[in-house]
Length: 147
Image (cartoon, rainbow, N blue to C red; front, side, top):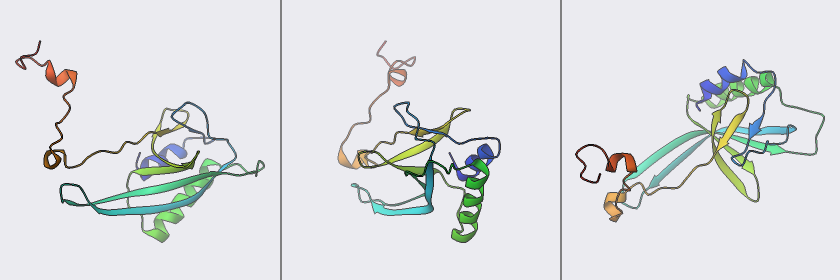
Protein backbone atom coordinates (compact mmCIF):
# COMPACT_ATOMS: atom_id res chain seq x y z
CA UNK A 1 0.00 0.00 0.00
CA UNK A 2 1.30 3.43 -0.91
CA UNK A 3 1.11 6.55 1.26
CA UNK A 4 -1.64 8.09 -0.89
CA UNK A 5 -3.70 4.90 -0.55
CA UNK A 6 -3.61 4.85 3.25
CA UNK A 7 -4.63 8.53 3.39
CA UNK A 8 -7.55 7.85 1.06
CA UNK A 9 -8.60 4.78 3.08
CA UNK A 10 -8.31 6.60 6.42
CA UNK A 11 -10.57 9.39 5.17
CA UNK A 12 -13.38 6.81 4.86
CA UNK A 13 -12.99 5.16 8.28
CA UNK A 14 -14.40 5.80 11.75
CA UNK A 15 -11.75 3.72 13.51
CA UNK A 16 -8.36 2.18 12.76
CA UNK A 17 -7.49 -1.47 13.29
CA UNK A 18 -4.35 -3.37 12.29
CA UNK A 19 -4.41 -7.15 11.93
CA UNK A 20 -1.31 -9.30 12.25
CA UNK A 21 -0.64 -12.13 9.76
CA UNK A 22 -1.85 -14.67 12.35
CA UNK A 23 -5.29 -13.00 12.46
CA UNK A 24 -4.97 -11.25 15.82
CA UNK A 25 -5.55 -7.54 16.07
CA UNK A 26 -2.96 -5.09 17.33
CA UNK A 27 -4.47 -3.80 20.61
CA UNK A 28 -6.64 -0.78 19.83
CA UNK A 29 -4.66 1.45 22.21
CA UNK A 30 -1.65 1.42 19.85
CA UNK A 31 0.16 4.57 18.78
CA UNK A 32 1.98 5.39 15.56
CA UNK A 33 5.20 6.60 17.15
CA UNK A 34 7.17 7.26 13.98
CA UNK A 35 6.61 7.98 10.32
CA UNK A 36 9.71 8.28 8.21
CA UNK A 37 11.50 7.44 5.01
CA UNK A 38 13.87 4.50 5.10
CA UNK A 39 16.52 4.44 2.37
CA UNK A 40 18.53 1.28 1.85
CA UNK A 41 21.60 1.53 -0.38
CA UNK A 42 23.21 -1.85 -0.83
CA UNK A 43 25.06 -4.25 -3.10
CA UNK A 44 23.55 -7.64 -3.82
CA UNK A 45 25.53 -10.89 -3.93
CA UNK A 46 25.93 -10.52 -7.69
CA UNK A 47 27.66 -7.15 -7.36
CA UNK A 48 24.73 -4.92 -8.43
CA UNK A 49 24.33 -1.70 -6.44
CA UNK A 50 20.69 -1.12 -5.52
CA UNK A 51 18.54 1.39 -3.68
CA UNK A 52 15.25 0.79 -1.97
CA UNK A 53 13.04 3.47 -0.40
CA UNK A 54 9.94 2.93 1.74
CA UNK A 55 7.77 4.94 4.09
CA UNK A 56 8.02 3.45 7.57
CA UNK A 57 5.28 3.48 10.20
CA UNK A 58 6.18 2.27 13.68
CA UNK A 59 3.30 0.89 15.76
CA UNK A 60 3.69 0.81 19.51
CA UNK A 61 1.36 -0.26 22.25
CA UNK A 62 1.57 1.22 25.69
CA UNK A 63 -0.39 1.09 28.91
CA UNK A 64 -2.21 4.23 27.78
CA UNK A 65 -5.69 2.75 27.37
CA UNK A 66 -7.50 6.11 27.31
CA UNK A 67 -6.13 7.48 24.06
CA UNK A 68 -7.08 5.89 20.77
CA UNK A 69 -5.62 7.00 17.47
CA UNK A 70 -8.45 8.21 15.26
CA UNK A 71 -8.27 8.19 11.45
CA UNK A 72 -8.28 11.99 11.10
CA UNK A 73 -5.42 12.30 13.60
CA UNK A 74 -3.31 9.78 11.67
CA UNK A 75 -4.04 11.64 8.42
CA UNK A 76 -2.80 14.85 10.12
CA UNK A 77 0.40 13.08 11.24
CA UNK A 78 0.94 11.70 7.72
CA UNK A 79 0.40 15.12 6.11
CA UNK A 80 2.82 16.78 8.55
CA UNK A 81 5.37 14.05 7.79
CA UNK A 82 4.92 14.57 4.05
CA UNK A 83 5.52 18.30 4.42
CA UNK A 84 8.43 18.25 6.86
CA UNK A 85 10.22 15.17 5.48
CA UNK A 86 9.27 15.82 1.83
CA UNK A 87 7.92 12.28 1.54
CA UNK A 88 7.15 10.73 -1.83
CA UNK A 89 4.24 8.42 -2.55
CA UNK A 90 6.14 5.24 -1.69
CA UNK A 91 5.14 1.82 -0.39
CA UNK A 92 4.56 1.61 3.36
CA UNK A 93 6.45 -0.76 5.63
CA UNK A 94 5.17 -1.20 9.18
CA UNK A 95 7.33 -2.02 12.20
CA UNK A 96 5.63 -3.71 15.13
CA UNK A 97 7.10 -5.24 18.28
CA UNK A 98 6.50 -8.95 18.73
CA UNK A 99 9.27 -11.09 20.19
CA UNK A 100 11.52 -8.77 18.18
CA UNK A 101 10.77 -5.88 15.84
CA UNK A 102 8.92 -7.25 12.83
CA UNK A 103 8.70 -5.57 9.45
CA UNK A 104 5.47 -5.97 7.53
CA UNK A 105 3.89 -4.88 4.29
CA UNK A 106 0.51 -3.18 4.46
CA UNK A 107 -2.82 -3.99 2.81
CA UNK A 108 -6.50 -3.30 3.55
CA UNK A 109 -9.38 -5.80 3.54
CA UNK A 110 -12.25 -3.27 3.70
CA UNK A 111 -12.31 -3.27 7.52
CA UNK A 112 -8.77 -3.74 8.86
CA UNK A 113 -5.31 -2.75 7.77
CA UNK A 114 -3.47 -6.02 7.26
CA UNK A 115 0.15 -6.40 8.30
CA UNK A 116 1.46 -8.72 5.60
CA UNK A 117 4.52 -10.93 5.81
CA UNK A 118 7.67 -9.98 3.95
CA UNK A 119 10.28 -12.42 2.68
CA UNK A 120 13.97 -12.18 1.94
CA UNK A 121 15.15 -13.10 -1.55
CA UNK A 122 18.30 -13.43 -3.59
CA UNK A 123 18.26 -10.61 -6.13
CA UNK A 124 21.08 -12.09 -8.22
CA UNK A 125 19.99 -15.71 -8.69
CA UNK A 126 21.62 -15.91 -12.11
CA UNK A 127 24.99 -14.73 -10.72
CA UNK A 128 24.77 -17.16 -7.79
CA UNK A 129 23.76 -20.15 -9.90
CA UNK A 130 20.42 -20.45 -8.10
CA UNK A 131 17.83 -21.86 -10.51
CA UNK A 132 14.56 -20.00 -10.83
CA UNK A 133 11.74 -22.04 -9.31
CA UNK A 134 9.14 -22.90 -11.93
CA UNK A 135 5.56 -22.58 -10.85
CA UNK A 136 3.11 -25.30 -11.76
CA UNK A 137 1.31 -22.86 -14.06
CA UNK A 138 4.45 -22.07 -16.06
CA UNK A 139 5.46 -25.74 -16.22
CA UNK A 140 2.19 -26.98 -17.58
CA UNK A 141 1.48 -24.33 -20.19
CA UNK A 142 0.67 -25.70 -23.62
CA UNK A 143 3.87 -26.73 -25.35
CA UNK A 144 5.92 -26.87 -22.12
CA UNK A 145 6.30 -30.64 -22.54
CA UNK A 146 5.46 -31.61 -18.98
CA UNK A 147 1.77 -32.44 -19.16
